Amino acid sequence: MENPADPPPEANYMADRAAARLAEEIARLRAVLSASRSAVQLRLFDYLAARSGDARAPKEIEIAHAVFGGDESPDTAADSGVRVYVHRLRKRLEDHYRGQPGARLVIPKGEYRLVLAEAETTQASAGFTAPDLAEAASPRVPTITPQPGRFRRLPRGAVPALLGLALLSLAIATGLALYAWPTSQVAGGTPDDERLRNTALWRNLGASVPVLVVAGDAYAAAETGDQRNVRRMILDPRIASREELGQHIRSHPDQFYRLYDFDLHFTPVPTALAAWNVEATLPREAAGTRRSASIVPASAMTPALQQGADIVYVGHLADMGILAAPLAAASSLRFDRPGAIVDPATARIWQAAPPAPDSTPRVRDAVATDYGYLASLPAPGGRALLVVAGLGDVATAQLAGLVASAQALGQIAVHTGNRPHFEAVFAIDTRDGIAVSRRLLLARALR
Image (cartoon, rainbow, N blue to C red; front, side, top):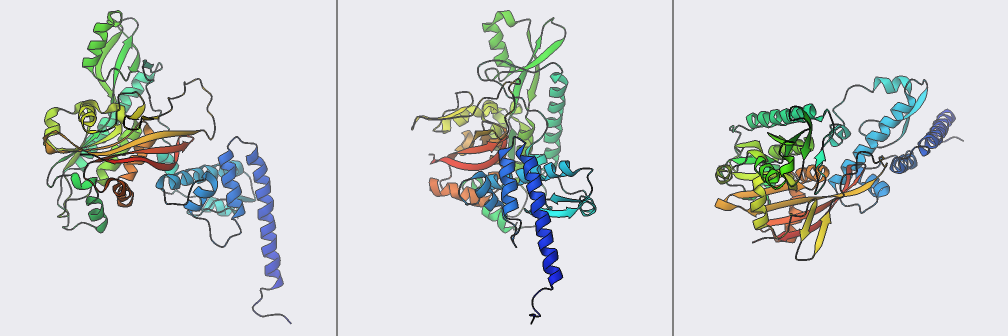
């Protein structure tokens, strides 16, 4: 006698048939992906395939633990890495099936599972959505990284691109300065504002004191071969201003007719985006009013500006300009070694890997480590100097996200006794240039 609660035989047959078709397509796609060179993508596919029959789709932290390794503690860097790799796998599936009729494997938007869908359903649900994280996390605009101790020459044709990026950075800074013009808001603010405002980092901002978000930029000299046409632009960590270019030419007179000053500075796109995010993160005043804030490039900083505002520096540690002096005076660490952070107290050196030459073949799933630096420092004149920086682009972007989290800042305060002045060093592990984990290496209170 049949149990009325049991599903009809036809339903069981259809469910078994759907499961068999899904398993068959998973096996076929796995053979395709196995031929690629991305071991991480294949591990992600295998994990999603193994969980495809679960009633609940896995969470980002579960995927991060199973695919990338590590513990299961919350980490926004790992979550971002999961979203980026899922985005890439989703695009890989879309590219594979493009133009083919019939059923195909898809990863639905907002879910982490493999689903067998018909082509018509897939096309109907593939409308426009908000930009994926991968588009923001992996900008296609090339960045320019100087090689320590020698000139980095930009290729022919890069001068217009450099000028374009300089104008773009100027436009972003101008627009954000207008956006940040002080306006009155509803008193009280939000609970998130209050928690962030009371962290050891942000509570150092003075009441009714203007804030300058300083975006790091690097000085670029022009090189000419015939004293008429600019052949290339040069970034050199030893030459950070037109004054230092003059000193360099005086000690290298053979370059007098080769190097010229156009007073141009280059801001990497990730630095501009990080400065934008940090400016938006600034907690409101206790009365709920928005802080008076604007964004300026490091090359525009003057001693007078330093005395008249609280400073939040965002960018590469090598691009701080005149802010490097108060950092060196207040920090227990050293930053005079190119591409490195040195702790004299423990003899530890955190060195970022130098950029590979342009001719080096790109290695898929390459693992690297960038280092970030966060500090609240006593500055001349009693003003606050906050530093949100990295040795490279990835760490800069990660630290800009960290300072928006009261929970992450609270974890640092546990190690520093919640002292108002402190510094911290982070390791940002990356795969293919995308952050997959963040580790706190040092947290130290300062006097």
